[in-house]
Length: 181
Image (cartoon, rainbow, N blue to C red):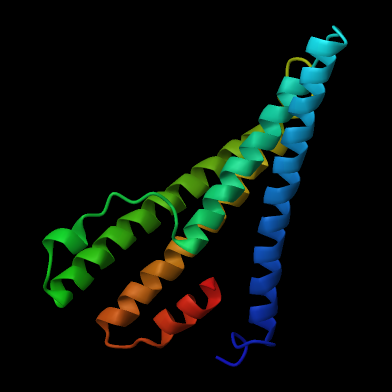
């Protein structure tokens, strides 16, 4: 477990991964904002068409959505429709049902990750291009693989925490909580 503690190799990787996610979010949001501003200036003030800018903005938005979704899964700030805590008051029953929910979430996220990986491989093989700029679309499809794989990873961690809690251990939960902050 020493690798996970601050200063360890796994901790450094964890911190770098989070930094990279934040960097991608800031860069894609900034790029999107600049592109939209350029479109407004060129279209409404200079009365010039700027072909392809909507395409680029859309691609940046897709990267923002998927990396943002992964970061939301990391923070546990993603949308959840769970009403378990409202209806179930028994902690043991709640733990079992929570484990089932986390298992289903994990299975679906892994399945979706595999699915988009196959889609990316298809995209690399077939090399589809965008209409206006003729950009290869695998750049956009890669965002889905990265984002969904990160989500699956974070959901796996949440599943592991639920398993350890049911087993009576809080060490993994404490470690996960400490790494969220």
